[in-house]
Length: 208
Image 1 (spheres, rainbow, N blue to C red):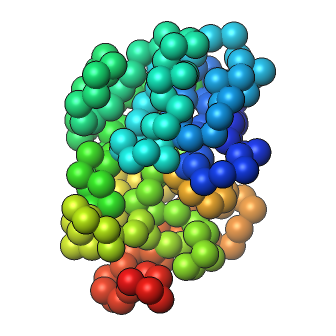
Image 2: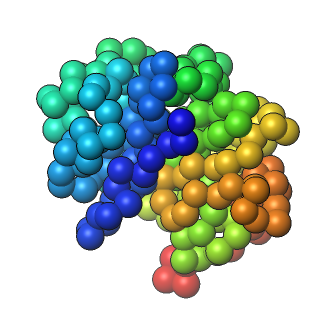
Image 3: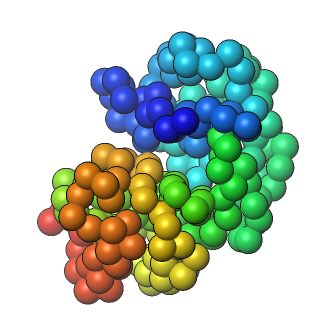
């Protein structure tokens, strides 16, 4: 089944949280939208796992509520009091019914990972399609403490190296989902464009 953006109706700032039904029903990130657990329950009876792309607040604000409600296993790269499985670069994780490879993609966050399948890629905040800075391929912000544009650029190249040509959709942490069937570019071309923009080393936002 197609991933469901369970934070789509959020009125306050949150990341995109994706519910992926299937063999291992999975939530990719939890977001900060109050009541997200209720939205999940509207679509599925249970939740097998939550996978975090990273632990910035907008991605984990409702994590405890989700874990308390459904008691799924928590998979994360960085330590967390409720983590069940530590994921590392090269690990394979079932997201719904699609096997995804964990690719470490730091720069925006030290613990950032992306999930690369044959059909879909979950990119968290390392690369998005439209975020107000760019509308057709943008990179994660790196202007805050602990972030690094150089590491982000390396991560974008690592993501491109791991990306199969068969990937048809990109599910980012912010902005819209990008589907190659609905646009003029492949997912690879979108990520390449974002990488080229990041490599200019110019500020992403005017006030940086």
